Amino acid sequence: MIANELPDTNAAIARLMRDKLGAGPGDSLAQAMRKGGRRLPNPLRQEGRYLVEQEAMWHNPRLRRAIDPAKIRRAQQDLTDHLEKIDRWDAFLGRTVGILAPLMFNVLLIFAIVVVWLVKTGRV
Image (cartoon, rainbow, N blue to C red; front, side, top):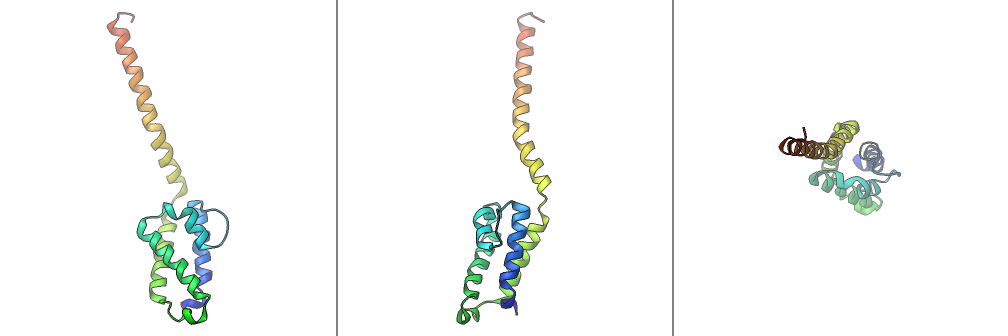
C-alpha cells in the first residue's frame, strides 16, 4: 500500500527538489515546498501541498485510512516527472541571457546614437 512508503517517496521528491530547484537542505517535503515550491507551476504546487498534508495524516493511524493512494501516486508522479525534466544549466543560461540581452541592446543603442551624433556634427 502507498501509505507504507509515503514518507520515503516524499523524501525522495524533496531531494529531487533540492537538486533541481535548489530548495535547501533537509529531506522534508514541507521544507522543500517552502523553499523551492514557488518555482513550481501552480497545479504542481497544489499537489506538493497535498502530499505534505497527506504525510501529516499518515502519522495518525486512524487518519491514515483516509489517504487516497491513487491521488497520492498521481501527485507524486506528476511532481517527479516535472522535476526530472528541469535542466539547471539551461535555466541558468536562460536567466543570464534574460539579464544580459537588454543590457547589450541598450549599449548598442547608445553607441548608435553617439555615432549618428558624431556624423551629424561633422566630427567623423
